[in-house]
Length: 610
Picture 1 (cartoon, rainbow, N blue to C red):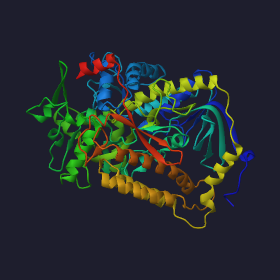
Picture 2: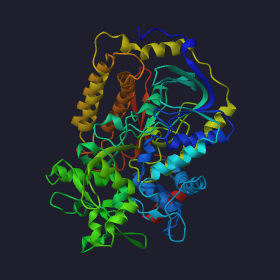
Picture 3: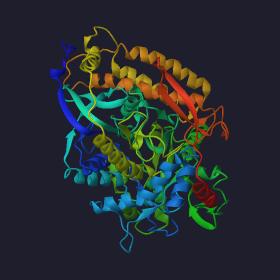
Picture 4: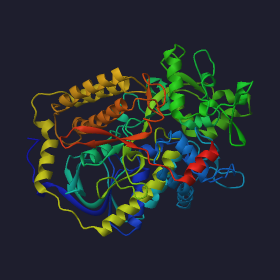
């Protein structure tokens, strides 16, 4: 029988000072830093090393290097990040991020990253949504790929053991602190036990809870769920970012991200009437006066400086809602999207096609090969796609440690930096800044603490429960349960939310929990995607419930969270973070915690930048 009872002697067992779960940008940077601090490090990746969602971050790394505009500095970056996050950000994380991002980019350059250059040889920076000045250091439109390449190349010179195609099922604890993790090898189904003094969760996002997403199959909310079930607090889970431009047609590229860099390089959004609809709804915060000729751009004023930028580069939540409005009001494209056109710049410059291919090589080649679309000649059909989770594990700003001693988090799995909405490019600098900090402080914790004890009987019971789907003679296909979950989240907990739909989603989630408990898997443990999906479902259901409960509780519209029945911001009651924790009875509890007061010097920066 496939679901036979196991004892500890049958498990592959490993011992590390620091275990890093997730091998994207944050995980690699954490592992590098922990190893540099003289501790033993194990690195786990759910897929193959190098296949991380970090590579999808194509536009660039946000850092106030001031190479293109000397007016830029950490204070402006801090103010932009706080404003984009609707001031629900952890201000200390935003401060550290803005101050340390330039050093992390230069460090990456020193490790071999090849950035595009200005004429005088400095790192080139481009405009991006929500950033006042050109701030994104980039490598064409494949910046994330270059980051992963560089970090991996640097990682191989450290004494780090890598476990590829390995999935963690549970975080193990000794009392209140972590003691290790339990998982399995995806290829053969062999269980693995990892003893560790400290654990860094860097597992990325939750996109696979939705039907349309730019995220690949790995992003099932594992880290959020593992931390929650270990007793850690989650925060800001209602804030899911829907990137405004994911491909909607043809089916071969549906959901694939169209980098914001396309708009940064001059791409414009058009409705079915071939009109630039983004001029119709520019927030008063940014509005000065639209130029008489739309092609000249959109002007706004901040302080005493004036800049010229297109409205397509407003914050992502705003652009996504404008696209949804066009679709709902009957001005969408034939496949429920809008058009993103960069081919128009051929009227502005010579050799426009060569310019586009040079600036956006991945976009050009990808859509030419996968969809037979030539972006130098025709528009793309795009619409919002689930892209990024602002919420995540609640961590301490300096150390990145969660509310569980010895459990750290970084990158998309952690909350705090982005508040209600992430600015484009801040994700990659987030990975570098806080991946480093998580690795550093995890190593320090490991040095200061002994290895915790692991309950053998608990581990054996976890293994037995993981194999239960094989033992059932009746039950549903886990793929069908996952499909139905994605439909519920896409239709009821999407970009535009309403209390009635959210309450209905909770009812549907209760039914899905029941169905999940009865899923059946056939075959053997080797190469069994059905079993993998069955185990992923527990994480998908946990994060889906957290998102929905938080969305019900926040009765206002702010950042990426838009309530159709509460379309305005509640400046008083809404000025809080929603914390989610597992109650003593095992039920999910939502708490409201007021946003921490900002120090006077940082408040002054915000005022100066308005």
